[in-house]
Image (cartoon, rainbow, N blue to C red; front, side, top):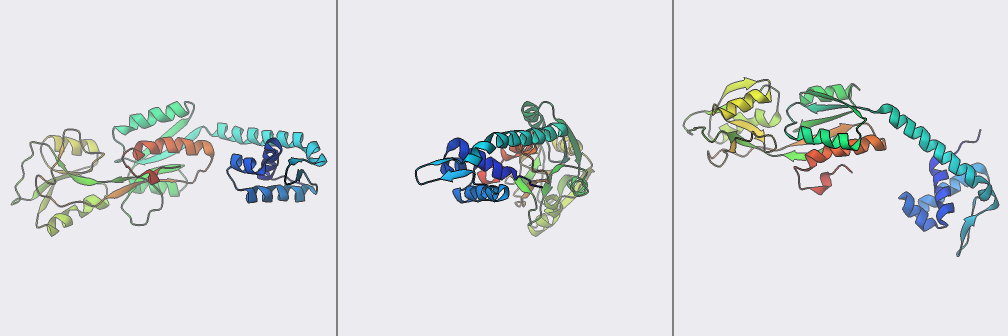
Length: 289
């Protein structure tokens, strides 16, 4: 049974409409060579010459004249079929590392709602390790997580720069251990902090270990301890005390997007979501598309 290739038929229709291989290639975002190859593949499949091409003119052959209306119907039917699948999905299962989202969550949801108010967005928040595991198990369509690994497996949305933050009223003496308030989630940057302080000739003591960002933030605001934050996530009432207390610099990490979805509609949604994080980097090469 004869079957038709969508890209080849689309190339034929574009050439027929524009009567130019150059303009048709530009329209379809390809090269003239690739366009000619698609047309050749279609003509070989139907065993008919569809386009007559001379140095001065590009026009339909007699068989092309017979085929053009059916070719348009074919493409329209294909577009309707694809659109029906996209409309049927209307659901995106997104996992986000629970310690990555701050005040930008409202902005992110507003942008998604503006783009597609009918979308059902299922957001799952947990540790970066947990959401990545769920993604690899096929439970999530996409995940945004923090990575300190040198090998980057996902799309980098922004680079997180870390420092030491405390209340303006926090008191510290280099002769005493630096009081730290930390989350109990594993974090490559935070876990290196004691060793980094030790190499700088300083001591540290974890005076609060909590399972939520809110508790750690409360401890920092109360002047109880110093917290290790990315600049994006530091409490508004805290200050960077690295230079004030002569503390060592901390390494960076990256926020990455992982997804296996490639359809155009989902890509647009993920681009909007990613743009919230892109705002924290000046590197245009980190943009999603």
